[in-house]
Length: 451
Image 1 (tube, rainbow, N blue to C red):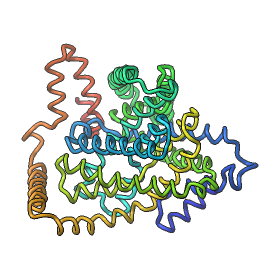
Image 2 (tube, rainbow, N blue to C red):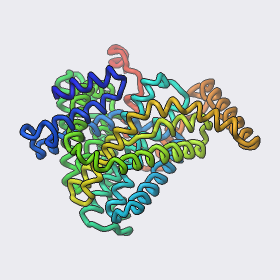
Image 3 (cartoon, one colour):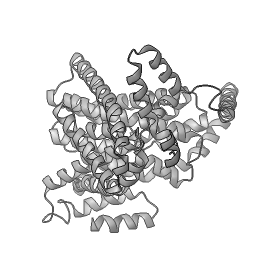
Image 4 (cartoon, helix red, strand yellow):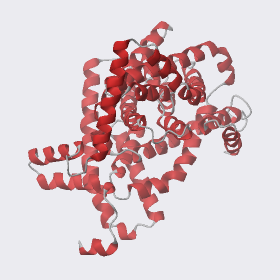
């Protein structure tokens, strides 16, 4: 942590992502360089696993169910194109590199999703936080996080069986979906109600202990059910995100999130042997190039097919040109289970570092690339680009002009449909009431008593 503090400060002064500083610090104090007599790899893996739990728990806390209803086809088509395209591309790269089936599957999973943390940080640092493309990009990242957690469960099953069986995999997916549905429904029914009952007694100390207890309790539940501990942490984060205390918990968790995120990324760096980076420099460059080209291509196409303008689609694709925490977790999983080639881990981490370093510069190249493409487009394509721009602008103006009473949102439509079709109306009403609590304005004590 001493080294991480110094190196991350240096990276901040150089205007580079702090995450890179953590990884470099890990390499410096790892067992392969200067920390040979200070570090035990078992301890590194243990602290890394703890870091993963808290990182995923905090990612879950930032998740909102209403975003799923409001994201529309841009998120669905975009994430399907990006993840599907990168899975196929990653698997093809693995087979082209003469890797076996298992290694190729894990490599494909490592390459198929961007880092939510790095993308949002890069957007903020570029001053694009209020840009039009950010809403669609954020929705895609949320879906990618969910897919990543599901992939962790499926890859664990595949690795244990050491085979890819379609019927068994579908059964596993079915069990996972049912389990998640039960956990989430029960959690939404019980936990928000419980927190509302004990709210007068919840000071910051009790609330943070209670939240961590719920997180680790769900971790144990997930492990007992045969799923990964990461899934339990993520699910409990999602459940607590739908409570009235969500923003308060998220605020209280921020210091822990920062500390354990640093621990996780430092542990990632500790597992890298610098000599392997020299030995596999050509593979690292090749994988980084695949990530950049693949993410730009599939990100732009997915958003364009989903109804975004070409400019917004390219801004999304150019901001997704890196891999991050979930790729490290999947790489660690394959390494821990002994089903992946030892060379893959340092290659993936080094490629991630390289693409993360290049992300701000690639994002700056978006507009020159867009202008070049637009100026050299055929008249037919140029007309289509202009028509899409006008269509999106008109839709945005209509959305801004509309009041909540003009038309129900997608979330309201789903809620209304469920209320009309489910017999247990009382239970469903309670479910949706709890789900929406964190979106309601906080009432004054007097008004709350009157109500």
